[in-house]
Length: 149
Image (cartoon, rainbow, N blue to C red):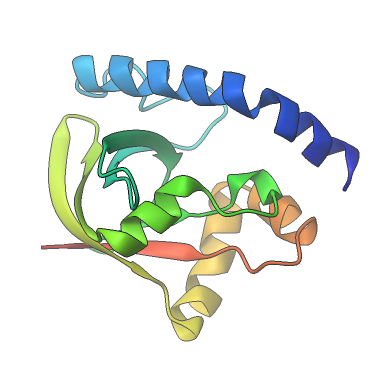
């Protein structure tokens, strides 16, 4: 395991709490605080229900708009495991995404191979670190398409 992943293992609990605070501030301000962070692409909030716990959770994530669809990346920084929200969306795909002050009902699905081929360069252009994350892991980083419902 490379050094960055070992550091990520140790910092993930702290980062998780920071992301929870970010989500609360974003939601309270309807995205006026938290959607735009200097030097970072725009952030959305994805709601998801725990696959095992049934508990509602919210995660702040970078996103790409692709027509009416919203695309999110299950990278977890290139960590060997996928993020929990990915499994939660697979189990409970009907959810909501908040972009700024707008709450959109969506259905989550994994991008097909053809879609991924088209979308991957776009997400890397949006946030070049995604390619570094892909390069450091053996797993293919999934793209999740949030389709309006």
